[in-house]
Length: 97
Image (tube, rainbow, N blue to C red):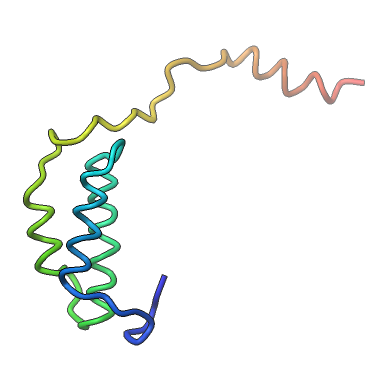
């Protein structure tokens, strides 16, 4: 990841094209698209010194999509879990000689 203005060359059009290609790829969630937009915003801040903004083309592409245009993200909530008694047995059985 670049950290200084001279570390990269990226135009407004290139940034928008990157985001659009990612948005149209299979299996991409809206949250992932927002993450890429955030990364491009970081690059915009490095290049221009304006934090809290983004490339105009990136903003335009992002406005063209809604969360309903993407597959739903997978939940990170576990569907099942081990009972505490089983975990206690498993953990302490290795230490009993």
